Amino acid sequence: MNAAFLDQPGPPEVIRVGEIPTPAPGPSEVRVRVRAAAVNPIDTYIRSGTVAMTLPKPFVPGCDLAGEVEAVGLGVKRFRVGDRVWGSNQGLLGRQGTFAEFACVAEQWLYPTPDGVADEQAAACALVGITAHLGLFGCAKVRAGETVFVNGGTGGVGAMVVQMAKAAGATVVTTVGSDEKAKLAKELGADAVINYKTDDVPAKVKEATDGQGITVWFETQPPTDLDRTVELMAPRGRVVVMAGRAARPVFPNGPFYVKGLSLHGFAMFNAPADEQRACGMDIAQWLGQGKLRALIGARFPLSDVARAHALQEENTGKKAGTLTGKIVVLPTA
Image (cartoon, rainbow, N blue to C red; front, side):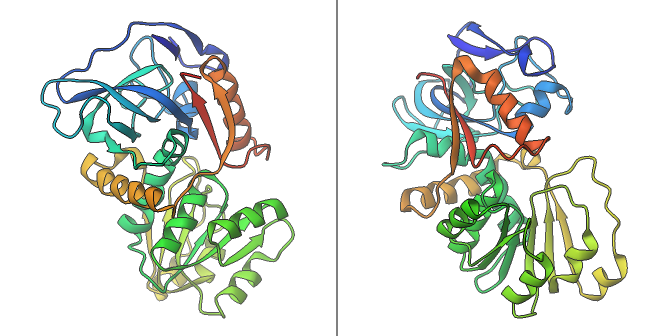
């Protein structure tokens, strides 16, 4: 099969594209013909060696995929040949990834793709959607009537948080960096959109909440100023963090405990399969109902995976601002 792969960690240029053996599904595995995959920051961290993980050789990167079942291994119960599926959690923890024509995936990491939902959408919602769901519902346990704040409402995770919080009946406040992104955030359902480049963010948050504060703060960026966050929180609010491996912000202990706040941190790929499946089933339902969609900012053929990784790095680490939404890779284009 045709695949993108690497032998050793390094810059995007270590990725090669060529023929490697088509994998055979083992017990409880499904072989998926990959119609769409998506690029995530974790893919670039693993490829570069920033996040050290055991890598098969050759190693196929990529967490997310969508396509159809092409073969099943012994013991597979949930899927049959021809079923359309999507999923994530590949290309890490010793598992092969998804930037290939075929991927063998344990059925516990796959979910049915609803009728009428494009493979590109399912793949682009995968890791970021599961991440948003784990943070909002697993950690923060958001409820109808609460107010959710998310940094970067048009980013990969941020766009999912905006839509899921609205689906749960919450009011959503978010930040963006341009008028164009403000329009997109409104289209996704945000109730109040703040331009962090031109607006006084704390003042705008207080205005949007009538001074009552934020109930759930979903931080998609490396935390830098927890003093400001805690000041803007409502009593008994919950703060969720899921980015910034090297971040060491000062912790405002006094106002934090006086307000009765809680702080939740998590990494999506550490969540067990049953927890992720609950997320996946909700995501599939919302996709089918038209309540959830991914913003897709760029598409690349399999032959250009290195360029896709470079674009992701430019925008995640270097903050180039040249990408709005997800990068999709099309292995069979």
